[in-house]
Image (cartoon, rainbow, N blue to C red):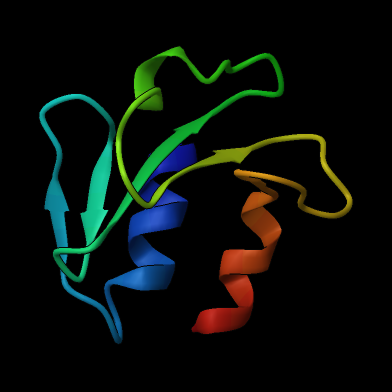
Length: 74
């Protein structure tokens, strides 16, 4: 469900592709891994422009972004 929400919000104005190590590549530039609050940095470690979209955050920090913020893009 998380990945579906993420894709539905970004696909309106951005180009999405599946990524081999994470979940999505956005506009051939940004890499996103979508997951729960305990999702760690392991999957995106060493990847340029990589971020986590993780649950249970009120505000983002570092490479962690709350999924609700992507709803503002629609």
